Amino acid sequence: MKNLKNILAIAIITIAAFSCKNETQPEVKTIDTLVKATKAELDPNATYAKAEFKIEGMTCAMGCAKSIEKKMAKMEGVKSATVDFERELAMVEYDQAKVTPASLEGTVTKVSDTYKIKDMKTVDAFSKKACAADCKKDCCKNKTEAEKMACAKDCKKACCAKEAKA
Image (cartoon, rainbow, N blue to C red):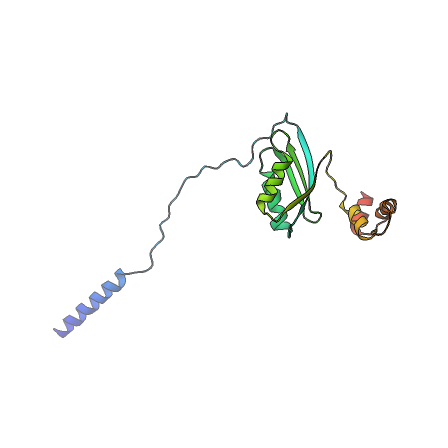
């Protein structure tokens, strides 16, 4: 009789141990989603303008500059947006009927309130020569405007040498 009680106790403990597993399998649910188009078609008959402006307050190229660039590029009516972190310069081509300089500024400041827009202007073509401006600022500080222009032409910086060859 004692053996029967031991066998019965072992059976009950075994059943209890195997029936109370904590290893539950996660329930997997599949949900259908609709993918919304990220960019509307650009109007070929629209009048496009180009704007350049400084963005102060950026601390990194990937986090700050790319975030601002992506937000502006997603705006309806924006054809292209580029943010140059080193020059703190944004260059945006946009449909004048859908986008205003104020809406561009609002988009930038919505990314972070630490960003400040300066010197927003409409241009015919985007500026490309940053090095000449850097030369004027760095090695030609105490010279007249004419001397600064000559200094930029004679600059020995690597970026200026590349521009001179092009």
